[in-house]
Length: 334
Picture (spheres, helix red, strand yellow):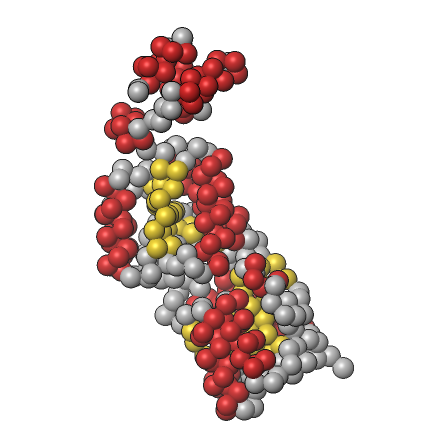
């Protein structure tokens, strides 16, 4: 079964069937319906690879993320998928596990599959993977990822400003001793900027950043729980803790609850991301809300714009953030 068979059965030209398949050009609704009915009746499925050889486009993009089990990336993928469906694109999803060799292998596989472009998310981009991304010669959009090593479009939030706003919110509620469970400072995408925002807010209000109230993790629940347990053991806790991810904040909350602390009466905890789980945990997690779905959607739209030759007005697209106030933070004002 091929496109000529469909055209013959529907009594239309091959060009008309092609326009129906690609959703391009003017086709009368009655004609479009007749062509679709014939394709369904004849169980016709277009060969994407064959079409890509003729048109130089597969209408398929690769999406590379560190870990699909992380709720942040799950929601990001939904945004990408919705934009792909809206624009008649398919996606190939790959988990990189933050393994540089695996990232290189995935780029090679995606190129062999003749994908049109890549949406790439990572915590860090070093010189090695930056070289691979330049060499592959395929349009790439960075999502929730930023680096000055590459001149690729990037979509995300202003991590430093967002962290500053959250810490200032805590200070506005009367907290003067605020700790932070941060990402690693070598992560210039989100780890360092979020710590920098925390530090800047503290200094702007004349508050000291105490070394024993700052620790570092990989944005996972177990990191937050481990660090909180260490702080509990040492004693002399801050009144509030700002965590660089919701998963670390949830881990910290669980640690304090297990040790008999009341949230937020004994200690306040705030997160960053606003994953769906943040609204389900006991008390509800006060968090810095990234528009995760919108970031994914916009990233795919920017990539499609590149593929269609549209000019990119701005290479660093910053979407707005908000603070979601819930029950995990208490006011210390008298």
